[in-house]
Image (cartoon, rainbow, N blue to C red):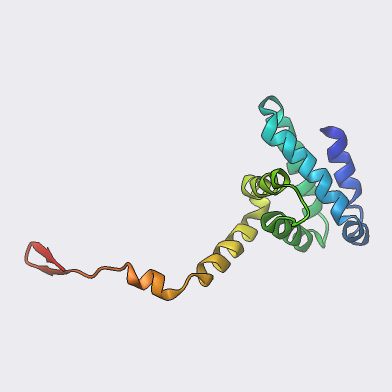
Length: 135
């Protein structure tokens, strides 16, 4: 786990390296994510290592935008990735506060895609007459 954390940090040495090695960084982070999900006895240490990698990324002046794009990619999944990898990726996004903005943006997109008629159709109006409610 520690080695995976160190490897992930090496991909974040510079913005150029991070962009070039984005797929390798994703694979490294997903490997840690699988440990996080599948081995409960290692959850605390794995989460701490992953958190340290994310904090290290944020310490870079380009880190916020990189993590946002990375988190968005995790949330949306990879067409070529396995179903297990895509599930773990979504769990990673939900597990770490570093990806809160990603979750907000995805929720907003999903909400905006819902037709207004679906929302309005299920609304029922009532009026109050004294102590009684009437449709």
